[in-house]
Structures are given as C-alpha cells and as structure tokens.
Image (tube, rainbow, N blue to C red; front, top):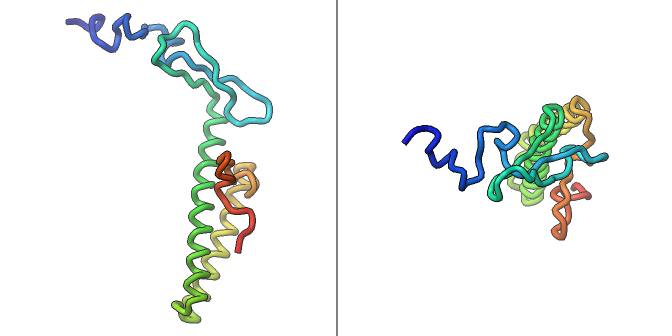
Length: 140
C-alpha cells in the first residue's frame, strides 16, 4: 500500500492534495467589527472537514486577547480570595500590605499589556450568551 492508497488520501474521505482543500469545507471571511470573521462552507471539500482562513494579525490579536482574558480572570479570582481571607482575619497586616501591592502592580501590568495590544479591559469580558459575561462588571 503506497502513499496514494493511504487512508488519509482516500477519495472516500474527501481529501485531496489541493492546498485549498487541506483544512476542510469551512472558510472564514472578514466581517466588519469582528476580530476573526465568519464561517463559510467550502463546497470543494469533503463533508467531514473544516477550514479556517485568517490573517496572522487577527490570530495574534485574538490570541493575545484570550491570554489577557484568562490572566484578568485569574487576577480577579485571586483578588476576591484575598478579600475573603482578609475579612476572615486569616492574613497578617504585612501579608495584607504585600498582597495589596502585588495586586495593584498586576492590575497596572494588565493595563499596560492591554494598551500594548490595543485592547481595553472591557474588551476582555467574553459574552457567554445566556450565562452572562465571563468577568463580573462590578469588581469588589
């Protein structure tokens, strides 16, 4: 069985050597006001494959947005945990001071990173549909 007969190149799987079919039937096109674009079906590809075409700048921007969103989520969770422990009296005055300064510096770093990537902190809040937003709009 040679390379042409391999299951990955089987005509029944809808795969070919054509680069246009390499990633499948779905393509992404630019949609004004969105970072990545919209999905569309590539009629030349097989029924069980997908395609996502996007430019490197959009990938960089979206990846940086995702990473910053996760960092902001973790920062807010740590901040809430610190407030909870402080309210319970689990922290010494020195620990409270250290945590406060650390969280302030992290918030400043987040602001700087958002500026560097052309994002605002509100851009990091993902809409989860019926669940609401990922990040709370009222921070403690």
